[in-house]
Length: 123
Image 1 (tube, one colour):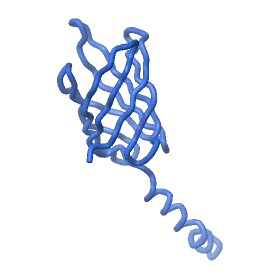
Image 2 (cartoon, rainbow, N blue to C red; image 1 turned 120 degrees about the horizontal axis):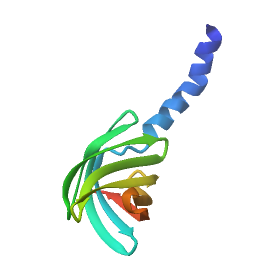
Image 3 (cartoon, one colour; image 1 turned 90 degrees about the vertical axis):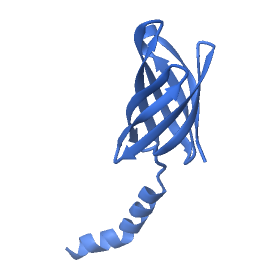
Image 4 (cartoon, helix red, strand yellow; image 1 turned 135 degrees about the vertical axis):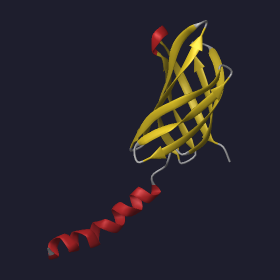
């Protein structure tokens, strides 16, 4: 028992400090995407609870519910939309570059199309 207490005293504050310093997906993100030469912008309002993300993304195609997850510094979220009368899924997979920046890849699996995105936390 004393060994466990000593372990927590030595490592516990460091572990808690790391958790407190971990970036969060919660916030309003200005997202810029480029897929196969097509540029687009969206505003994603995300809420992170534990590892789960919920929220919505709004762009030229309207507003759509978004879901995703955070795993350490990796952030993944997606939402469904309509394109030329058909349903598509927009999938973002990125990493926190800082607490206010995420960048990575964006894809539309239905078209086997992918590109890059960057997101900046709105101030």
